[in-house]
Image (cartoon, rainbow, N blue to C red; front, side, top):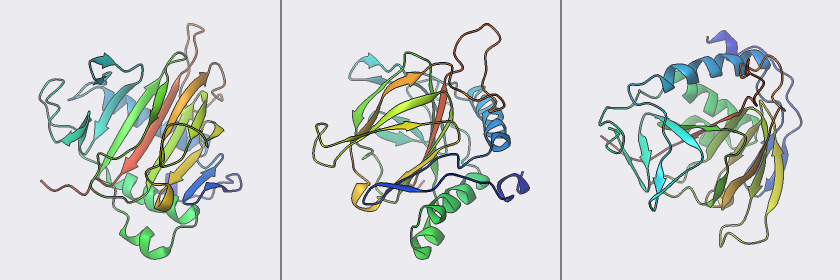
Length: 229
């Protein structure tokens, strides 16, 4: 597994979307994507199953399974008290290494790279109808960068400003294997997913359907909570 994330890949050229926000197309190889999809399937098997969280009484269209800390609106807990009370799976060491590589590859200073120790991940699954409204990731005490990975169907990702959900914002197409990192001045920018593009997942990424339906999209976001315990 260590070697899986050490061999050289040929990602696309990093593109700065805003101050502190960088998009790298094709950062993960197909082999790496398929391996992560296998891990995702293990995570969804429990002890805390994948579920759609409820925000202000309304069930999200996106389903989530967490590592390290369990996110529920608007806090983190070790046990999934809103699901089955079980403790979530530990945050894996390989993901810490991957997060640091992500910061290095997107131009963050080496001291920030070395200090980056994510301790939670939200692994989201989007079917072809799922969306994510514009929101800020502000339930963490730490404002360390967020590392986002996409696998499967492409999506339209809307990345906005730090003041409101309104313009200015940029609409980006995030494809399978893409990396998106946002920190610094963009750490609290509003962002969301306006649509998933069915049947765009590349063959070999690990996501597919034998019944002819869309593969869907996995999005993994790594964060530093700044919490203890």
